[in-house]
Image (cartoon, rainbow, N blue to C red; front, side, top):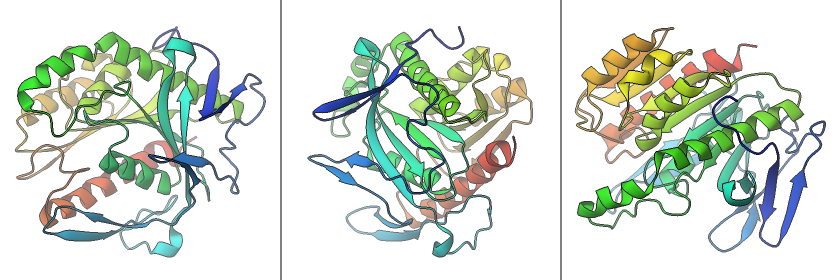
Length: 320
């Protein structure tokens, strides 16, 4: 039954009304449409989002570092200008049904969509975290459809909570429940792409907690739903399952990350083989690629993003 046996039907819920899609011959979200714009729920209201890809991010109270988000479908040169950017639409939705349903964000390239889907697994701060959502937006900006599910069922790790309570919190995130939610998200994406007449495989990307889950998910993926993986400084990785992975995996980490030792990643990379690759950044600790804290980290974060983008492009966008 593949990853897990889940409901064959997906539902889309907006506040006070619900639409259920049961006809697999219809394009449910119009993946290939260039005119589609969809609602993205914010903290208090639903809005329509369709914007270009120039963003700036505040790193701390003392320093603001501006970043131009370079976006394109197949070109991967570093000098891409803003005119090449894709438009991205965002929507909050519910995947699965009943007690198995979970919330998620879908970011979709509106212009020149390449038809490839990416399942993005968040770190412990959850799918609502601004750094993770910005990263998802940037990936979508390069022509992809990115699904970002709520792996913690509304209970992510609060940044202000004392670290002494972390073990108590992580125990509540039952591995079987998380795995089932990831499987539900995967099944939803597969159904959507089949409905759109697209046969391309999915990509799997994860950070920290999600980066560790990338290895678990790919090891269980006996139906071959995923064609490629990216693990950013994965935590709680089980090296024993790596040999079951049938697709190449890109590992990105810092060489000064106690939560993700480089020697462990080296062994996993060798165990997987299949063209897998490990890229380490000197002096970098945990979370630098999607949560940089300085100008130097921001520069390495850009390099890491470009490496990931090339990897996804070569493994998904330019192959049938």
